[in-house]
Structures are given as structure tokens and as C-alpha cells.
Length: 67
Image 1: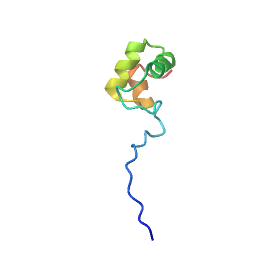
Image 2: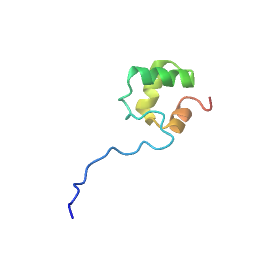
Image 3: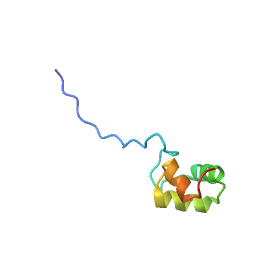
Image 4: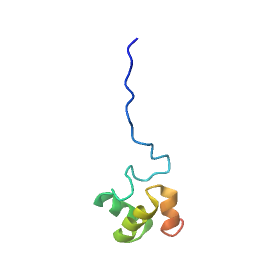
């Protein structure tokens, strides 16, 4: 039997993740999308991702509740 080498895979972002990116790595298109979804400025979306990451529920709490 042949051994299969163990490979490192990125951690799952979970079902509630709105972006498949790590905090601080959001590109401009993703930031604009978040800004539209939460009706905030792109800078506010960028800061929120930096503070809480990309989980939708965490961003929702950070940016002011339900939308």
C-alpha cells in the first residue's frame, strides 16, 4: 500500500463566512460588496473585516444589526 503524504489545507471558513478571505486580505471588490450589503462606506467595511474577520454574523453585529 502506498502512503499518501499529509498536505496542509486552509482552515474552513464555515457556513456563515461571506468572504473566503482572511481579515485584512479583502480585495476592493469584496469590500465594495460588503459596503453595499450593509449600507456602509467601504472604509467602514474594511475596518469591520479587520476587527472581526469575515464571518457574516460577526460582521452583521459589528456593522449595526440586521439588514
